[in-house]
Amino acid sequence: MVDQPLWEQIGSSFVQHYYQLFDSDRSQLGTIYSLPFPKIVHSITVQDHQPTPDCNILSMVVGQLKVDDDPVMGFHQSFLLKNINSAWVCTNDMFRLAIHNFG
Amino acid sequence: MVDQPLWEQIGSSFVQHYYQLFDSDRSQLGTIYIDESCLTWEGQQFQGKKAIVGKLNSLPFPKIVHSITVQDHQPTPDCNILSMVVGQLKKFNRNIWEPKEEQSILDSRSGACVKQKKRAPQYNFGCRLA
Image (cartoon, rainbow over all chains, first blue to last red):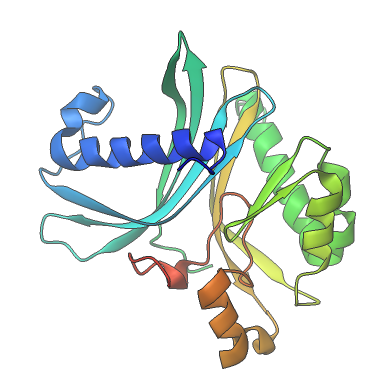
């Protein structure tokens, strides 16, 4: 971890924390996540992190998720992290399922 | 278009312009980037306009066609615009997918067309590639 740039460390820590919360108790993520399924598991395939000119961190995750007993689905999610009062918060979040990607 | 928020207009115009350039003459993509720009291409990091353009010009296919499935745009607190595209690549050179290059794709995760927020979905198997 020592050799990783700061944005990689912060980005990957956030991603790990986010999906851990999401899969165990997503009520802790705030009221926006009032989604209609009790159980979900995320598996991260890859993740990328970059610093932005405004000293934020842009993160992108490609992975798979499984809801209840439904088949596995792919997803893409992007986050923008910002440091506010010494805490890293998520100011932007974009999520897409990789279904209907038939071109 | 009149009823769309500004960030939707700017974001979708940019996305259209970007893929139009990429598919017709990607050497012109330099106009989009500045020295503070970053590109992550299938896990490889590039910093600055010169390095980014160098990578895009060195991709091992002469022609490619992007097809956008969906796109999302948001304003950010610093008055920037965050955009994400999910789509497909078409009409790529079949040589890209020969076993030798597939192996290098598996090892270094390069080759499949990716830009910032895109990843080749066929490698999304839910496990880390060796």
